[in-house]
Image 1 (tube, rainbow, N blue to C red):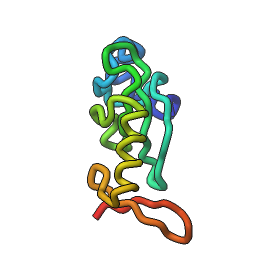
Image 2 (cartoon, one colour):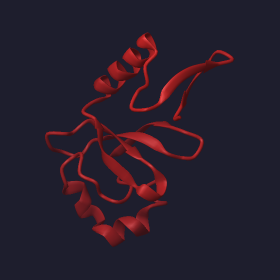
Image 3 (cartoon, rainbow, N blue to C red):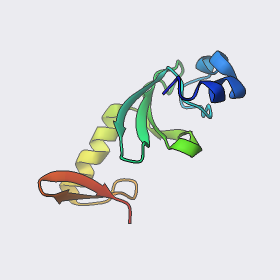
Length: 109
């Protein structure tokens, strides 16, 4: 991902973006982003490991929209929200969980 986004990274600030605090939108994919989940379109969730009070927050990277603002303050918060969604059959940030042939999937109505 860092190689794929290298030109964009250079255009929007280069390696100095790594000095920005975690949670700040950079407009590119940085080496400080650790991917933890993705979908078939290539959108992904990542942990922002840059320094700052939001270090460890979970954020989304949605292709053309690049890195999104902070979604969850930590991976624990993400997992707690997902578990609650599954236990109560409620949407998680608009996504509705379902089971298809034994596989968990999420739909965005």
